[in-house]
Length: 304
Image (cartoon, rainbow, N blue to C red; front, top):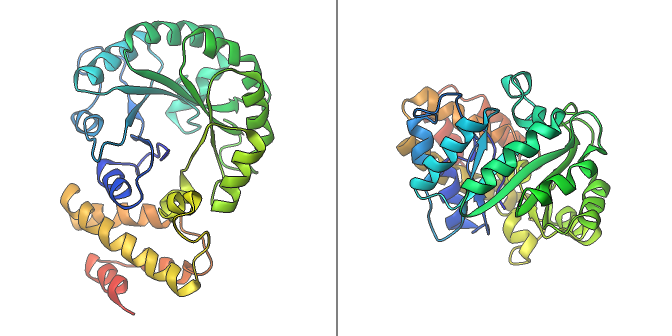
């Protein structure tokens, strides 16, 4: 699965991934649900939730804390054609924690249970959650597994860090493995999967039903193919540079169609580059991030 990543997994990037590496499932960026039941998701989000291509299932991820508003949003996106919905129970940033949404919902398990049960009654297709291992206690998730099963959740995506950890430390997939053992629900492992070897090890050691790729896939879309064994697990240094150039050239063309103005397009491209850390391609990534214009950015992409 391609993870929901705010500012990144827009419809242009998802389409590129589907055409190039064909993930089994893709997620939208999280859709913020406003506390008003009248048009409580933006016009752009309405376009995002219907942007399916290539026959790959699209999961719409909602984030919010008002049950009535979430119900209205769920019905809206289903009317627009969404067949798979997910609730964000992991976002650790800004208003999502201070306003008791995202990962902060884990602090109120009784209210969370009522919310999920009501949503399940309204959601016709699949219904899942993406969850951290806890708000500040990494063992909290074990107390939530019965709640998820009782609410009729179809599968769980587990990122084994706490909300308070943000992205510090390492994702502890020993927790993922224990979740797999303690719940009858399918579990998708997420977090720190940056190579095919790591992904294969996580699958083998946890027994998870699948993997969700986020930062690792944004840096290297071919990670999907590497995991399947249809592309080398590790490319040669020169090949890595050429792979990055080809990926960014194609993404740039799509971003020029989707976004408005040089500044926005350049910022969006640099957001992708913030996730590129392979030493073999860091020099190119650094040059690209320093680009002051799209012309210079494109020159760097085509130079040998």
